Image 1 (cartoon, rainbow, N blue to C red):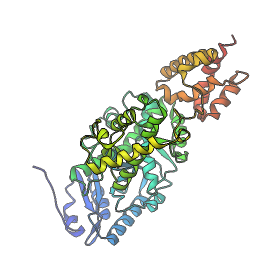
Image 2 (cartoon, helix red, strand yellow; image 1 turned 120 degrees about the vertical axis):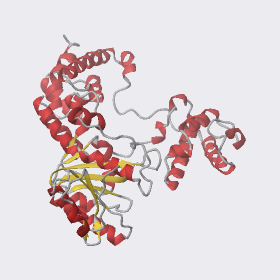
Image 3 (cartoon, rainbow, N blue to C red; image 1 turned 90 degrees about the vertical axis):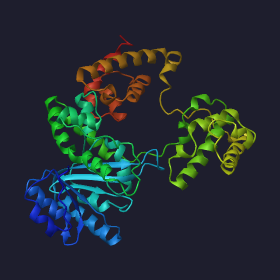
Image 4 (tube, helix red, strand yellow; image 1 turned 45 degrees about the vertical axis):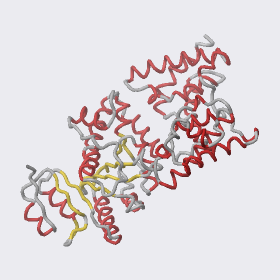
Length: 442
């Protein structure tokens, strides 16, 4: 049986905190005060964990609760563990549906960004602190949408890669580094569900429970390996990177596109993809729940002349008549386009051609790439990290395709830096690339 103490107010709870339990869960907005005050008192009394929630549905109460959380985290000390949960596969886009934070002196807070869509005040309150995230590039876009942008961060997933850990998921890292096993049973649930079930909230709180401890352990390991400054440069690059540009022609990423060869077929993919995206955005559902990629490709290959023919294709058989006619209108629009309006096969290439074409286009460049890849792979193995974290494959390809006129440490280092390599990468990779590129003239 679970040993649970219940109280409906700060006054009722205070006499009971002298006997610590595993965790104190407190509503931020209690009748006689703030649950955050209670969490501070339980921590002082030896309670190891605290979690702040707000069950209020009144907008004024929600704002007051957020203000109290903001003040508590501003007054806290040390790094701030930050995580976000999205509803990938369920909702349109990648917005955050839950934000979790933990900081010494403030405890743990779970915030609903649907009810609190502007967290810029909270972001500003902790802007000077180091934010600890796991796989930061996955969460930063959705955090930016709600006004939370770090100036200093520590990415425990990237730290694990640089330190040479073979498995860098949060659960694996916590288990291997700290010896704790995290519950991961709710990682793929629909976080847009309201109200969120208590087991999901508990799971979400655990995601930030040990992040700062993991950060501290990884910092020591990186320092031991002489890689701490490398990691700091990587973290700075992530924190200072501008938001990514919108992807051009996102319809070209439809799964199965390799089967689509003719321009008219490409136009069908584009029309169906765009129609699906408009519907998914309007309904706020994942595009795949509206129409699967396989069905789009099937229609593009078949070029059906009418809704009856479309209904015979895989993925359209269970669609109602009205929806079927909508999809057929998209196909008809593609069929009616003039040749000049049809999309070109493939996207404009801004960098080197695919490596498989190098042997025919430029055999010397192909030889340089082979030597460079082997050298970089060997160096990555010696340093104990994945090759792509040592230097991006795209950077290696670009330098090999258009090497400096004079191959030496200065010119190769400048070329690497020009393609975005960090100083530590330039220092490590330049010698092996000079040797590889120099083989051509040796």
